[in-house]
Length: 256
View 1 (spheres, rainbow, N blue to C red):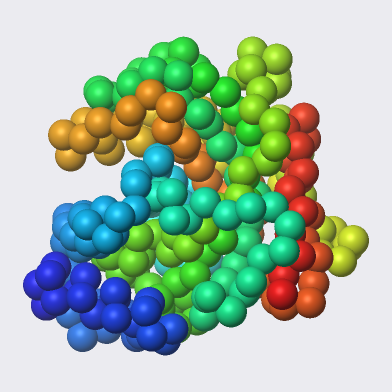
View 2 (tube, rainbow, N blue to C red):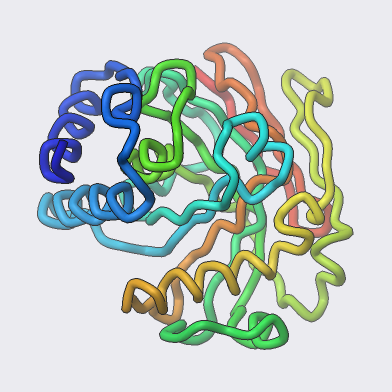
């Protein structure tokens, strides 16, 4: 299966609102480079249709989630303006198997055009806030291997940004921040920022390494979702969701 064939198949499934069995079931030799090639074609098609790039996202940044999904490394995807959602009512009918998770969102204060060292990442942050990412995998039951999830734009479907953007210096230790998900007022998931690669700032380092390896640049003023604090929670119509990261804020969604 060529990257072009895969991108067309995924695009059709997304438009038609259906899921697929993983490509790697029939083609187990598909690898990371192939998955990113499909992802690039998908992004090119979206931009050709009028979407605008506004950032990047990381996924599978926690050890627990890597084990659960069977993918043993973090992945990188893209964000466009069509993915940006408003807080409040969320129409779940646009997706097939939506899930939602809380994340730290970085607003870049400088252009990232090279691999950063661990001590440099903070100086590239222009602000930090809370985000709720909506996932909607093309793969039935979220069953996939590395090449599949990369080809599917790392399951990215949408994201909501909290109302406040904070100065990183005033937030404190991101790894120690507590995050939780409440559904109809009941806590269903809880973790700290340490679940994200030990420290969410490491997501920026990993992203910069990815950009350098692919000769890509992330402009100043881009959003970066660092990866989920907790496991993703099914987004079910009729329920209210509150996704909170200590100090950064709370996002409230009413699924309908």
